Length: 267
Image 1 (cartoon, one colour):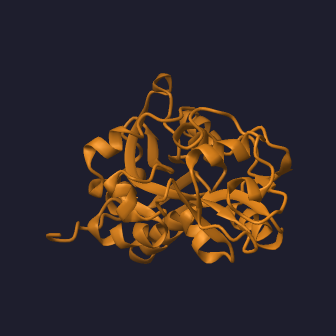
Image 2: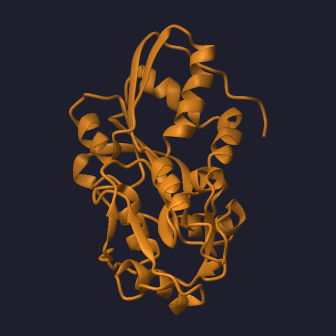
């Protein structure tokens, strides 16, 4: 896609904090950038949505967020990608998918046995991310029709999708939800929703709803370090990195599909 964007290097430091779901992709992008710009001291953390508070207070330069910052925060949005998520089940549950109504039934606690949704006669073991995890708000908004997760189950203390997926793989009858990139590397079943499996194609076609817009927020236009990094992160060279991590570069997503997920959950 045309000439590669020239890479602008700066010195000093750059602090990025936020989404643990986008963190693996950002790790690769910051690694690529650091290789080209060795004079910059780059720090990346995955503290979740509260990074929006940190960027407002000037404690970090860029906040990576899976949810939209409230307009009262007055932050500048640099949307980077659409990130795919998946509902996952343990390998012993022999079903390939669920309807969104069935997912709502399971996570509200109304459906408690896999036989109620065409699976084996086995209790459903619900495993959940911590209550503050952004993925809960995304599931609620785009899959649960606004309903909150009320099912009894094991609730994680930290928002670590990789560990959550590992638990699902080892717990008979388990169900949960994680970023698609995590599901793809774990020994779990990735379930289709309403007959559609999570994929870039399905997201672009508007047939799969469980995804979020990934935002990079700065205070004002951001520091010169942040501006140079954002230009690199959004460049054509880094698009393939996003795809490797279950993220679709924002420029590929049709405006109508994008608007279906904006503003989405806000914090």
